[in-house]
Structures are given as C-alpha cells and as structure tokens.
Image 1 (cartoon, rainbow over the protein chains, first blue to last red):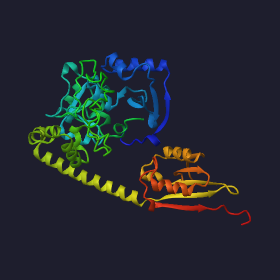
Image 2: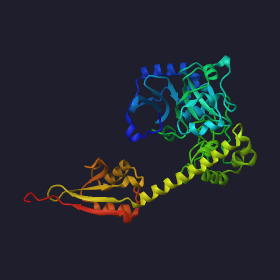
Image 3: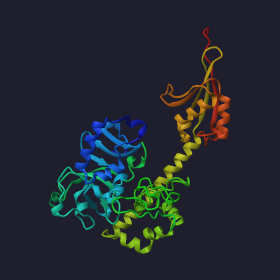
Length: 184
Length: 227
C-alpha cells in the first residue's frame, strides 16, 4: 500500500474531522484493537483534533499533531502505523515469520503460510486463533519489534492446515514510505 | 551507557520517571544521542546532523542497505548495544533455524544490496553536482520585471520556504509556480537577479548548498510589438 508514496503527489487534502465523526471513530478503534481507552486517550487526547489526510487510491491517513497514527483503505479496518504499533505492541494479535521471510517482507511482499508454519514462525495457539480478515502484527524470528502490519487472508487454523498461498496480506512494513514519514 | 535513555516506565501509566512525561514526550536527557521513538533506540542520529543512517530499529539494520555504515556508527556511539547485536554469539544465535547456505545467500544479497545503494547514492550526488540553477529576469511591461529561479529543488531546498524568505528579504511578492514545462520555480516580483545571486553565494537561510558555478543568470527580453 505504501511501497511508493510521496506526500507531494499522493496526498489530496487535509481536513480536520468533525467531533461526532471522531467519536464514532474512537469507538470503532476501541472495538477493533485490544487497547484500553486510557492509552488511546494518551496518544490521541480528546482535545487534539484528528486530521483526516485523504490520499490517492482511497487511502485515508489520520494524524494527530501531524503525526500519522492510523490509516484506512476504503472503509476497511483501521491499521495502526508501524511506529504506533512499536510503542504499544499489545494492541494487535501477533504472528511471527521465520528469518528467511524477513527480507521479502522488507521488500513489501505478502506473507505466505509456510513462513508462519516453519520452525522459525509462530501462529497463535488454537484457543486464541485469529479468524480471517483481521488485523495482525507481523513479528519476525529473533526480533523484538514488529516488522509489519497486515490483515489475515485465512484464519490462523486454516493457515496451519492448508499451508499454501498468502496467509497475511502486508499493509505496511518497516522501511516503506509510510515508515519514512514521521510527520505529515 | 549514560546516553541511552534509562526511562523506567511505571506499569501502565508509561511515564518517564525523570520528566514524568509519557513515552512520546519524554525528551529529557535521553535526547542528545538516541531518540527514543518507540520505546527502542533507532538507527538514526537525529540531533547531531550527521543524518539518518538507515532509520530502522537497530535489530533490523542487517536487512537494510547500509549495514557497514550502521555498524560503524553504532560501534562509535554505543559499544554495549553494538555487542548486543554484532558480537560473535549474537551472530551465531540469530541464525536460528535458517540453514547455513540460506544464511550465506542472505549475506551475499545484503552485500549486493549495499553496493547497489552506494552506486545509487553516487549517481544522485553526481546528478546533484551537475544540475543547474537558472535565475531568469523576465520583462513585464515597460521597466517592470519579475525574476524566476529554477532548479533549486535539486539541492534539496524547500521551494516554499525559500520563496517566503525571498519575499521577506525583498519585501515583494514571491511564489512557487509551475512554469511552461510544468516544473516548479520561484517567481519573485521585481528585478532582483543580482541580489539573489549574492544570497546564493553566501547561503543565507534555507538557500544553502548551491555551488555558485552552477548558477546561471539569463535575461528574457520581450519581443517588441513592431517585430
């Protein structure tokens, strides 16, 4: 999504959001992420207005104090930016890829199932299985911090069973153009 | 060790003990060397002006395109962290489940990537040195002129800021406009080409880093109606 993204050409408008819209958005985020209202409040205080940055291809980035916090594609789920995820790593369920997959992930590839099921990879245990079309944080073998944010294409149980094809679609990753943007 | 932020966060409240700010706003003594961006140290020398090395979290430098420089930088900055990521045992342990040949391949790939990045940087530098800045005096009506400056963006000058500075300096209008070729240029009202040349030479404000040999002053005369 952000492999090629340059603020000067890809951003259409900056608009501050209406309070009522912000309220809904806050509720949506609280239901989509595993985040306490207090933490969200600390990152995005009620007094600081959220700015909606519209970009090409129906991407909207939301910023607080011109720092991007999360983004959305069409009206899909709200992805936290990687920098935000690093600060609060517990807000999304984690999946882990093996070491061999890291360099492909850093080139922006979607993550294939075998990367999760091999020795270096890790998927959540059956009792915490993640269904399809959910946000996950992509971690890497032997690394402390997440490398990417993605959305599951299969449920984690299916990934273990089928073990073929795309398991997690990468939305943003370390070193993409969104990572390079600290302020908008 | 003292330049790594020793913030101890109270559980859940995430406040720095020293300045009682949360992780975001903790800019206390940790600031000069490492910027605590996300609760971890990042491969970026923010304040010293050396420029960002690769901006990845330290543990991911090995996948970046400037590993050698990252390593050198970290060794100089902080021996302890360097040992953590690049000492012998760290290297053997991080190979983990990857087979030896795969690891060798990865290393080769990294070296290749690095060489490529270097070549790219070289080419960019060459291009920068070769690019021209033109200051053009355009005649308007009678004795009125505007001055258009083209090509500043190649020297990573923010055109908007530069225009603002020039506007303030000459107390005239200055704006960033697209010229006939669709390229951005700064248009300043009035004939100020000599002064602009001087400013570029001195490197005032944001107009820094333009080699004076690359600057060219041209004059656009309006055709006379009788021609």
